[in-house]
Length: 364
Image 1 (cartoon, rainbow, N blue to C red):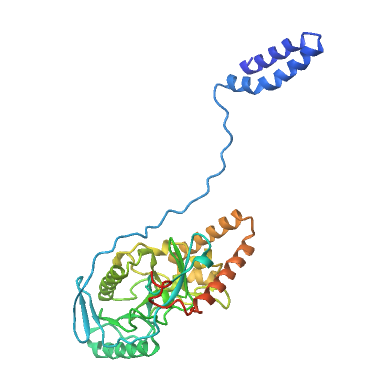
Image 2 (image 1 turned 120 degrees about the vertical axis):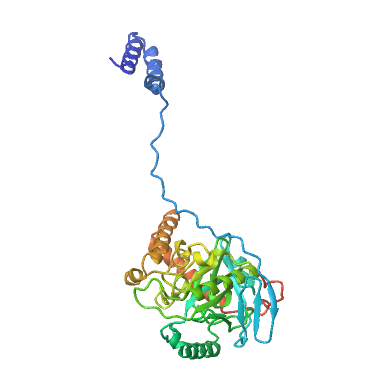
């Protein structure tokens, strides 16, 4: 007979042998209190509750890589030279509206504690999607003409801060203190802040190139990649830009009219993060989904490839978790996020008179 059964049987017989109601009553109570203890002693090990299934957690993405010090070495009439070898052609530089934007903190009441800034917070990388010629020596004159035509267009539209041409030459177009018209309906978030309307808050850097559906590499030449690495190094050093805020246009682009991501798809795949000494930011959950409630078309995701899929899947998991934590259905939770996006977008376009560069509410 098992030890546990014998102990229980003996205790019952002992308690009920007497005829007194008094002993029956107190014996029954003792039995109720003693059985759990006897069971644990007989089993020889403590009782533990069953554990709940572990919630999968995504690995953190490193965004704190230190910047390498880079400084201006000399300035001539039409160029600047920097300590890391970067040379910037300044002949096409033109002013635009001064940069000024609200950054919304991730902690606390973001709407009340937002901060107006005039310092850039990140970099968005683009592709010009302009006319191209074969990158061959015999086509050099045509390549130069196309590049000059592109620069004139970008200058006229104030489209980017920097353009890197097919030969790896870096041109500053919109002046660094000003906003450029490169990513108007766009969003991003880092570990501390939300950003809406990246025209104002992020630099726009564009590679002279053209992409094709399904193409995932060979967008740009090795010379362009080397130049982009030096330019990124300089901008990050000068403005203390976090590595996690160096992202592609496809990662930040949204369409407010239908609340879908993927309005622009340049660099949806194939961006050379590693060559630019950056973490693979394709692995970051897309803030447009988890912070602002945007959706996506399956066809867009399929055409973008695995790079964008990783960020979308992580964001969808975050939405489901947050909705469950708040006791809301995902659809209702997304609706609330979308309302927040619309409010913040309107605020980012309504600059208060007191939030001017140099005032107490502006700056980093």
